[in-house]
Image 1 (spheres, rainbow, N blue to C red):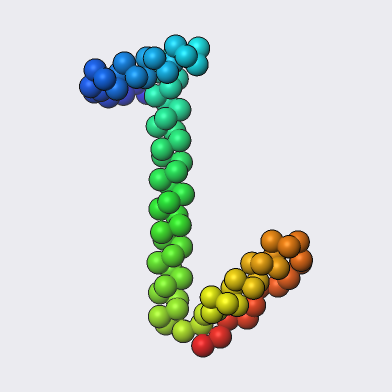
Image 2: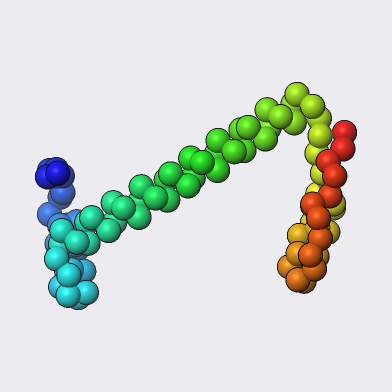
Length: 90
C-alpha cells in the first residue's frame, strides 16, 4: 500500500545521505525506521498494560513481594541458580 509522508527538506536530506551510506534506498530506510518504531511502541504499550494490570491486582488482593525478596530472587537467577519465584504475600 502506498502512503505519502511529508518530510521537511533537512530530514529528507538526512535520510538520503544515510541511504547512500548504507547502499540502500530512501524507501528502505524509511520503511525500516517505521517498522522499528511501531515494534518498539507496541512493546511499550504491552508493558504499560501489564503494569496497569499488576497494579489493579495488587489493589484488589494486596499480594506482593518486597524489593529485597525480588532482588534476592533475581540475584540467584543471574548467578545461574534454578530457583522458583518467591510466594507473594500480603
